[in-house]
Length: 259
Image (cartoon, rainbow, N blue to C red; front, side, top):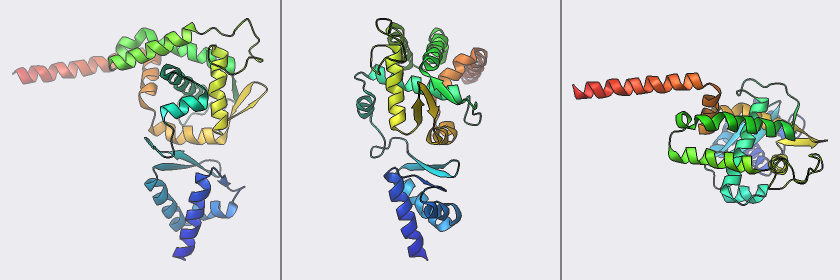
């Protein structure tokens, strides 16, 4: 029995690594083995942990994601720039920001899917511009260091300097390319489509189950500084109160130390 469980676990692990879908509709026997056999699930989980990978289940399907700082199954910044079609680090950071803002169009947090069916290029452009306009004036209270401040100033300037399109072209006919807001957003979505996170129909980008699985599981645990800064910009009074409380606590500690 143990040998049979090991064989099934190894097959599940191998298929997931190659991007195969394991669900109640595809490789059904393996999906049932993982879902109902604790021994198989435990072996798979051990293999994933050793490989620094994460497994998420969503709508009766299994989805794989690389763990943090995974040098084998994840992407380096240089690899991401090549995959998306970018050259500069500041372009990559802007792409990260656009992806983050795309997430917020569908989710306010991991447990509140908006039931939005799709987004369009213009929706993402509007959301990205509005978010940067909200964050940049508050950088003094939002960021923790000069590096964060400079990073946001750089991507805000890059975004601001981009024209919407070139030569008054129609957004629907403009190709994905660096240099315009429409082209840049389309570059980002081409990458998301290649990663099986979105599909595109008639200029509308539909979130796929893999995107939802990652957001509703991974995003909650690894929201990071970008989420903190964006949330702080959206609720400046709460941020200022928190900073004031921290400053007050620090002052009390210094007074106590002086005595």
